[in-house]
Image (tube, rainbow over all chains, first blue to last red; front, side, top):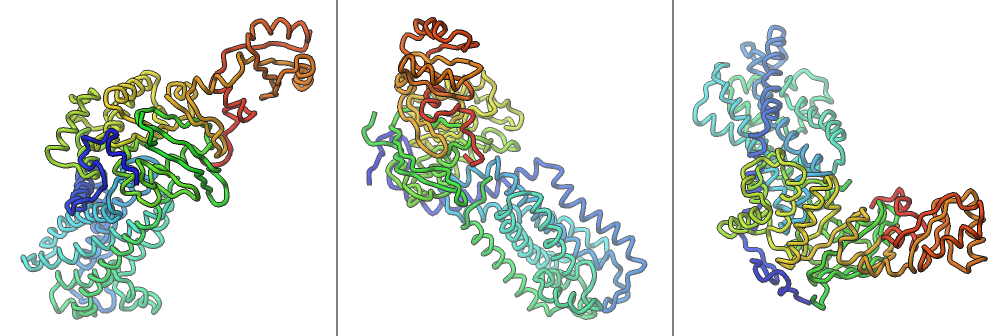
Length: 283
Length: 315
């Protein structure tokens, strides 16, 4: 192996054979994570898009549907604002995951991502940094929204807050990783919008977020049953509502809801890692 | 100049879904030189750049950077390459220093060493008072400097630049070249750049000219131009094909048809021109005579003009 260490490299920290230290894995991850956060803070419109839009949906749909909302299975004293509240939090996660990953497509022709692709880092660094950063942002926004719970008469104890945050962290990771995997293979933002409308939004709609499964046609019930987001939402509802409401709504058992949420997060992260190994589509 | 090439490209081929973009290209780049890859759009420059930058693997042949194979040992190659992309890779929402911090950490730099390199580069590039400014507020020329600083932060063995002058006004273009030159003289930086600008190619120490995926010429700009025998005369005529034949018959001279004009090479062209005009009265409507340029080199090797070389292929 010819070594050219004498050329222009004497001052370099790694002049010859290159053996990255372990810290070299986590420092790049941290730097990419940090970048996601700093960028977010400097883009006010994103804050509105991810937090304002779901808030608006919740208030308008909640106010509009509350008088007529009385689906099969839901307890009588549960109004729609309250029913829709956990679903709105998941919508915040979903929107945030979409906004975070859209930059992967935009960066294809120009942008910071190019320099990450030619940097001597492990392929997983990009996934961890990007998904980690995106999920952190999603989680912070979701928890901020969660703090509105007392307005609806939902008592927020430390225990509630802790478990709800845990469910949200897992769900945020899963959705951001799913968005990453999709965005990695897309070559236009238009394409990503199509996927968002025909796949990601329905994934949320058919999770019991917007209407309960009980009373819907059988095919819808099956989709709701195999949709992992259903279980994220169920776990969240169980954290927030009183036990008798949860029982009345015939949610999946808490253990199952948590288990599937964890599996969903791990599987989506694996999917993102697997996608990253495939070539990035260049223009 | 070191005898061992810093970049060694051997019989490199690549195609996109059956459309060939590189058809067996080979050349070497040595330490300390500014090496240009000149070609029209679709010539294969961008494909070659991406293969060298380890963005994808070549279909055939091999490329070594500092002795490491770009396909087999991409991480070793990456740590030795400073890549400057054609489109901006700086983050406009971050400050100059933040951009460089992220870049440094991606290359294993941190702490005092990173600070030291960063400060040195900002000073070198006259950016120290822009340190905390958002990159999106900088002019195009200054942004390009940040790009260059990013590429040099980890002291790469070679700087790889894709169309570095694209989108720059003439002043910023000159500024970029002054910087490259001073880096070359003061720090022995080696640069490999792609360009479709003939005047930019003139400034390179050595050149590889690509057309339709083939290497058509390799050498210093002077060497390449010296291949052309003397001056280049271009004739406009209402009957170019006839004029071309008559030139050949009468003067036993190589005459070619380029873009509807007759092209001749001749030593002491100014003495030859009156003879031409006398020999073909009424057949020459106008003519130009000039010292050979790189475009003439291109025309000589390909038989067509530089800008006609662009095909539907991607570059």
